Image (cartoon, rainbow, N blue to C red; front, side, top):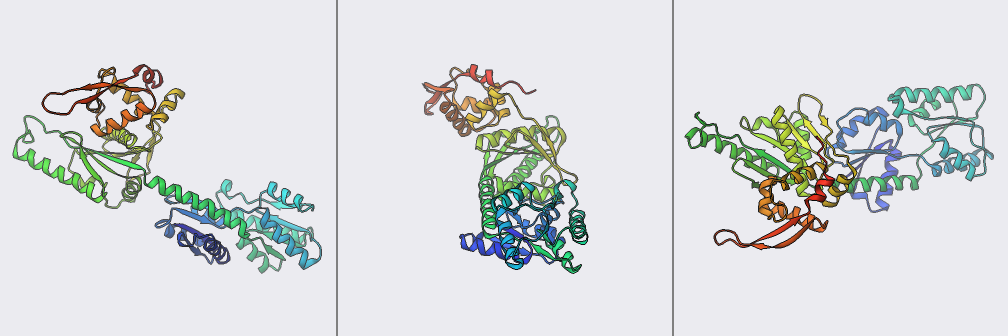
Length: 445
């Protein structure tokens, strides 16, 4: 969904344009009486929208000045088309173009528009720089002072403003003012951009995610020793907690070994669960729901293999400090906590050749480094998917997908098949060009 926030007339225009373009079902409007309502409306729409589109710069600044919004935020910019409509209106009303002051619109856009009209641009122009000032109230007040000074000194006949609150204050003070509103073409382009952002967000939400869960290893010489009733009870409680996570995430659960399980889910589902952790609410990823010593690491990625690798990286960091960590597709790791701001660790590999090979394989640069290390533990000239899975710490099916990527990149070639012990089917043997990987995957540590 796209949420549109602004004055009633601007929101009405956005909804009308959306209906004309077939986007009516995915656009919801929230008009405000005063611009100070923008942040509250943004918080309301943030629960259901992927994109929040503000029709004005001041509302955009007020609506986004506080953190916590999950949706992408955009604003509708003013363009030359907005200016043309105002110029035509003034010519009709006055018979000529009066002297004017103007605000908000970028000076370059202003100069270009008046050049197109073969007119001299206004001499009294003030930009609205709320992004730099981080104070939308003061910026709007400065605009009122600017216009009032220009009119009171006799330098201008009319004041043109893009800001609704400024227009209202000028009119209340008895100063001739015209509000520059958005044209349909400008609103249509802004909605198109918002729609593209919405589709991108939905695509990202469907990207794979992996939750890696490691159960505590039973300790010898204690009541937790393997085989004791106490150890069995603890193991069952831990397994039940793992099943609960998988069920609440609506994910697919698989066991890597006796101590490690993995839940496959979507990025959107995981991000929703993480937001509950950050807000201090109970959810499927709340660590206090788990028995002691159970460790969880979360990974996001463009592919399942990349998500798994990022989850292993997050798990390793979580084992050191006991917190919940998330490995992101770009190789960064974020510590998620309900009692403080998230902390980001930048662990990205930046070697150009490593980045190129990692991108070709569809995995992260750090995953490439760990893959190289895993292959150095086996005979890379004759390795099976099962052997790679054991060395790399992933499921055999994931290892097969990784080998397929290596084949597409020309790094792995099929050498033949070998029979295993017993009646199992023969396994395919591959040769991995380890020299190419070693030459690209420099150790980031």
